[in-house]
Length: 128
View 1 (cartoon, helix red, strand yellow):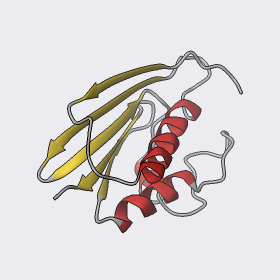
View 2: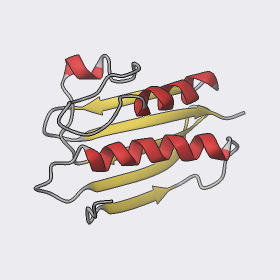
View 3: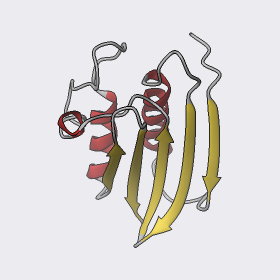
């Protein structure tokens, strides 16, 4: 494994909520792995993880300083086997899995990204 000197900051307004631990771990692993993987080698990955409540949802946000994505990539990135770039190792199933887990429980995903500006993915998990 390659060391990246990643800087991970957290701002957790919600620290407890009901969700399957294994699935939440998979969601966070895939989002943070992509944040590190899609940061240019010339810079250290910086990741901001936040959680908060909004409109009946617990929101988990993972924001990075990576390569970002243009509109054509953003439209397909949650499809199976789709990737932002072939220049980085991967199979294209990570974000597909995240999307599947989140939508199966009635959640939703918001993606904010521009080339060269990093990416923020917000996961909205419905709470009763």
